[in-house]
Image (cartoon, rainbow, N blue to C red; front, side):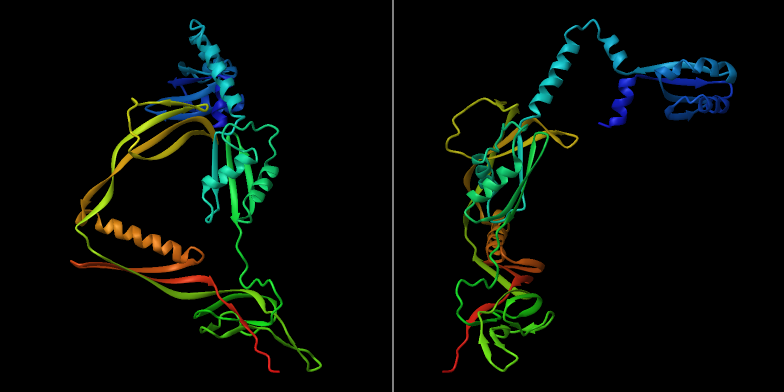
Length: 389
């Protein structure tokens, strides 16, 4: 809802029709008398516009000077609404009570949204936050968002680098950054070099300890020296260091998946959907209960929103399904692509894929999917320095 429209509605206005006379003169006189009009439309010799009630009185003198005829075709505003419903004595108090309840319930958390995490599921994050005081139904005033974030990080056992909680109305947005172990981080001082553990092109290199040998943009092969742990001093002596740094590179990779066809496979068959109304923390089933203990369930809840605020009224959709044997021809492609994407996720979950090309081939006996990837990944492993005696 536009705030300007609310402002106009509170001040009360009328929609008028202007016909005959000199319409242009009427408009000029309105401008001279500071009569504000909006949503003006001129069609077939008739001008319609909205005018505030306080300015409508000025139109009497302007009408006489311009020779037009003015007719009220609509009345809008809080005053007219009350007048139209003054006989419905329970309506106005009911609306006010509902608004007060909504304003009060907006002081509680009814929706928690987690973003930014890949290693930890949102449900785990929400469970950590509940131990630090942030959960569904938490009273917002006086709640320490920063303290809740710090406690959740402490409860993550080092899995989370930082966590920020931002509360707007009844919605809490949680931004998470996973902890990423620095490449080449060493826990001892054993002299070593950093060498490439696969072929690639160096994208960026940050040397903490040692001497960087390969520059950005250079191609390396597996085993090439990237950061040397041998440091030559100005006086000719040599120090042996534990080389340490963070090196990223663009590399080419490949993933193949081959599966023999089968006559029958088990697939998920959706049976029915059920809906539950969530009203201020109360669950109201919109279905007749039955014994569904043997069926699997998937649930999703969507809450009403107003101008970015989450209203504690939502609808939960629960899909009931069971496993059933289905023909291989019908589900083979979807099933095998799903298996391939699972393998792809676990293989490249710590890499950034910038390009991927896929090939799918099928025959009567086999189903094969292959992918060729260009990835950005950390490169470099430690290689001990063998010192001559």
